[in-house]
Image 1 (cartoon, rainbow, N blue to C red):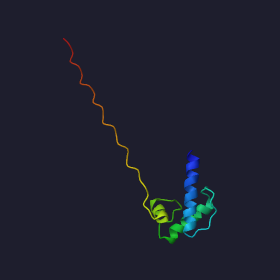
Image 2 (cartoon, rainbow, N blue to C red):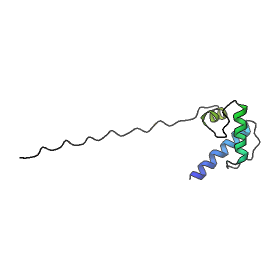
Image 3 (cartoon, helix red, strand yellow):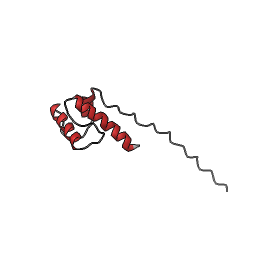
Image 4 (tube, rainbow, N blue to C red):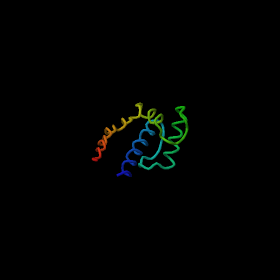
Length: 88
């Protein structure tokens, strides 16, 4: 499942890079061509050139801010029962 998800995201990334001037093969693999296209996109858009698709790069590629999940709510702490009084 994780491999399929990663390939789908990479496929989408490659299509976005091509829409923004790259000319790479869309195969769902984050190989050297994709890495170089990301770095070139970052340089062209005055982003930090890392080769990694961080939130700033994704926002520039899509025109939308990165969707962030709200932190999971913690269940309220269970109260421990009060210790019973000892009988004398």
